[in-house]
Length: 402
Image (cartoon, rainbow, N blue to C red; front, side, top):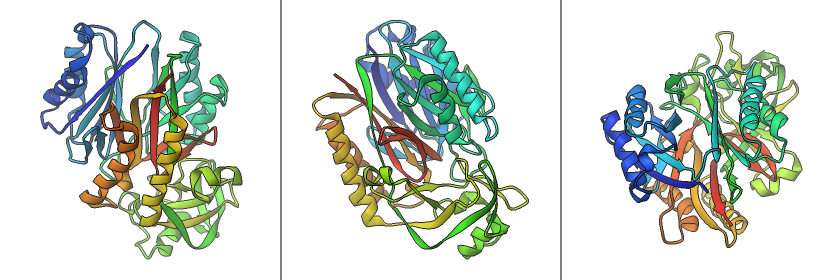
């Protein structure tokens, strides 16, 4: 059976930060854990020396598989840290070989998302057909996330739970990084297959935005690249609608430029919303922009804005549904992906702490669970028994035993 341990800190020196995290996380683990095979999942904000993080972890745990990605902030047992050098880890310790496996790729983009995800999934399945859940961490700049999900399901089927998120930077939408096989990647992806039949994952997902005004129509697109809206260059058209400069960079626009797309009816009640949101983090010089999923012509899109009452009330309802899903089973650890815009870009410290307390308290039940979360660019979260990609959500992945 897998055992999970977490820790986070804001130590500035990267080597010290990772080694202190590992020692703090594994303080209650068996004495020989540092020298054994284990998985270390890292979330780091953009200011750390990533090579020093990897080397520091390898020095302390020479047999560890070290993976992870950058983010705009780390969420651990003690709350969120959005400083330039925040770090969090989840250490996953197996009882025997084959209880987890890792695959990675160096270059995942919109055009090859299906194939690269399929190849990683195939590699995992060939090594361990007993995988029962998949964690996926990928580049957050121009991936076609829905196509990546299709690639995983081509191998494992649609019943395989997929959770995780896309990496981010400090809300600049310039570069995000991933860590795999001792290297720092910029357009990479990591896929972790867990094969512990005693564990399953229960997921909760919610955003708190509402559509405003009338929708507009995608009149020209190519896969996930939107070329024209209402017959005009897409990004300048959207910026005009938001009363922003036509050449605005997408990074600073993330908190205000979320686009809503109608959900099929069967997903609306469990989502607590009629719309699923999309974030834009890449714009071409010709004024086209990239959605994180395919966007066919004639798709209707809405500008959305956050609704604070919906955020807080919806989060309570989501956590109630999630705790009902968990039932009497034991939660052993929680992975968590939150939209980068739901950190300090939207909330002050007091409100942010209140939101995190609303997430953690129902699952902690008076104690403290291993918890690793990040503020990323997007979230892979199952909804109504279907793997979907979301933006601007809080997405909770509770690993339960029993």
